[in-house]
Amino acid sequence: MAAEACRTAEAAGLERSLKLWHLIVYGIIIIQPTAPMGIYGVVSNLARGHVTTTIFIAMIAMLLTAISYGRMARVYPTAGSAFTYVSKELNPQVGYMVGWAMLMDYILNPIICVIWCSQAARNIVPGVPFAFWAIGFAGLSTYLNTRGIQTSSRVNAFLSIAMSLVVLLFLGEGVRYILSVVHPSAGDLLRPIYDRSTFSTSVVLRGTSVAVLTYIGFDGISTMAEEVENPRRNILLATVFTCFIIGLLSMAEVYVAQLVWPATKPFPANIVDTAFVHVAARVGGVFLFHLLNSTLLVANFGSAMAAQFGASRLMYSMGQESSLPRRVFGVVDRRHHVPRNNVFITGAIALLGAFLLTYEKGAELLNFGAFIAFIGVNTAALVHYKFRSQERVVFPVLIPAFGILVCGFIWIHLSRSAQVLGALWICVGLIVAWAMRKAKTTRIATQQ
Image (cartoon, rainbow, N blue to C red; front, top):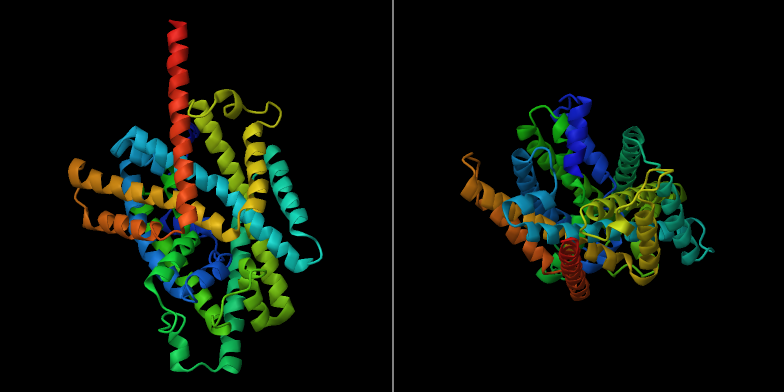
């Protein structure tokens, strides 16, 4: 799909007009300034309050991986994808498994977004059951995607600006509340980063395995390579700067939240998914509660639509290449020109998953696939710049090796259930690949 998009871009005569700051703004729009708010309660419970620390560790892992993504985008400036990098540098079969793991991410993203939106809607209308909202959000997202409706970049930019203003409002109100009500001591100021009574390396790394969701989407910058001035330089810098800026902003958000609402005990199950908006209610009352709740609801619904859109297109691409059954996944609705079967399949999965999974389990499963992709990209960068490329770069082995190490260390601290379910997904991918190869061999033998 990436290669096809690039050929289209070349045919249309797109100019290399995007500068470095354009890419950074685009990256922030993709990730969203409110990125850590949706996962705040889950991470706080998992890491026993050390949310700021988990965001920082996740930022280190993502910065190392961002460098590898940027370096590989220099080698393949028209195909910004972990699937492409791993297939070309390591092995096509390994690349397929990375692509299969990425498909799990695409499918799980709508699920956790539907779960979050449904919980947020119950904050507004508590008397309406979760099932009603889950059916409504999954159904609306599916309907809009079958109509080929896409959110324009201008709307995304407007929403990101609005979200940034809400974040600044929260930070301002949070600081006011801390100074006027909390009156923290020096020990209190350090506690969100390190609390000796509750700190544990294993629980912090478990929380980090979910906190990485804060940065998911940064790799999308590499898809802009065809329209960037000096892509060999700017793609790498923009990817790194975006992760760094999002990391600083996210740490500020959760640090203030932890001072406002100290993690003396876990968030209750009924508010854990939307814990951040309850923190906002403490500092800004009902107004800030509903403002932030509505802002995050819109943002997550937009993410659900975009993820469902992407999943249906990835399935279509795999169907066209016969990696999935072409008759089901490789067809397009003639009226609306969308892969309607795939939209309905992803919508049904999102609805079913909303009842079978919790937000926490869905997030951990999503990161199971994401970290496989990150480890794959770091490995591809190490192999290319150490053994194949004549180009000299700074620390060609050390940076991707540390990226592999950190990402791998976080990956193994995913919950056991997430690892088991993720392994089952990989097994399904192997079975699908075997079945498709066997069907292709049979078809060729029959034709002969």
